[in-house]
Image (cartoon, rainbow, N blue to C red; front, side, top):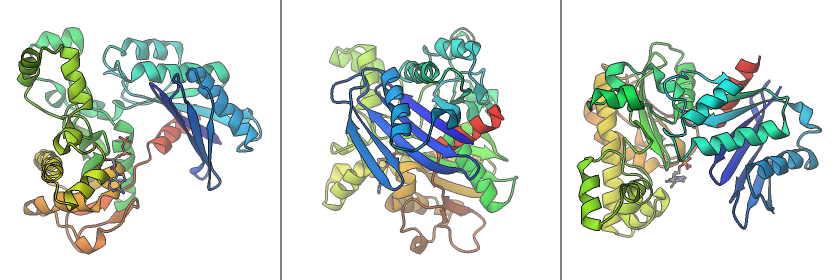
Length: 392
Ligand code: ADP
């Protein structure tokens, strides 16, 4: 059975094609600058990377090119080989606690959540429509970023703000990166062979979030009503005092939208370091003595440690701390700094095991009660697994 997972962004489209009998990746691709000048794609297949500039004026065209190349590059013989397509959808509000087969009603719901995720759901809709257009008879599944966090109790998801904001406008914590947190939680359950685990997953990428998971169920997560909340990120501030927004609006004569844009795109590691939003650049700057780069990394580590310690208490202890995503998988120095600060909680890293990137490995000291693991995430496979299960 071959399943494709699709992740459509506002000007991009990523796909991964899996053979599900062995859960192996057959090919993956990335269309960039969709709807813009200079659009191109890269497809990885058979150890090769194929890059081509091709005009993709919209997502429909990108999907057409993608399907055409799958056949013309002999990745598959015919489109009939694709049994199902799973789509990443950022917002499923409080209705979707699991992935679902996409029907007209589901599409209507996803459209109605555009208000909640104006930057993401419209692009996800374009991706779904484009695939439906090209492959009208193939079953499709929506995998929501918010779904895994629907197990949060009301006490965890409610904000202490006027209650009508919640009842009238859906203002509550939703949480994001659900496919990744769910994948890592399932993987570590499998690796440790126990269902009763208390796990904290640190998904540290350009977007970053932390989840507390008990017996496979998420009990709290650091992102909130939007993906702006929680720990500091590449360009997002994470939690700040909300009064800063109106203060800066007045001081700088900015609109609310402009300030929000700064908090989403000009804050976080980028703002504090003044160097880059990319951890590798900042680490290099820190090594050459750049004080602000050091400040940015120290602050990042601090915000992670704050959430981990909070969740340690919430979980009533901890069995496993997991690192995943770009920085979590590939940043041994940051992992070490975080774990070093957590030693007082009995979280002990074996530094000699930590110097590697991108592999599933234990990095805690031998015989420790609290295990520390690096678990490479695979949101695409998670999407394909859910799709396979739902389409039977
Ligand atoms: P997203 O999927 O949210 O775009 P990623 O999970 O790809 O983000 O993570 C991007 C981050 O991972 C960047 O800050 C980047 O610097 C970091 N990263 C990737 N590779 C490395 C590496 N080898 N060393 C340190 N950081 C890395």
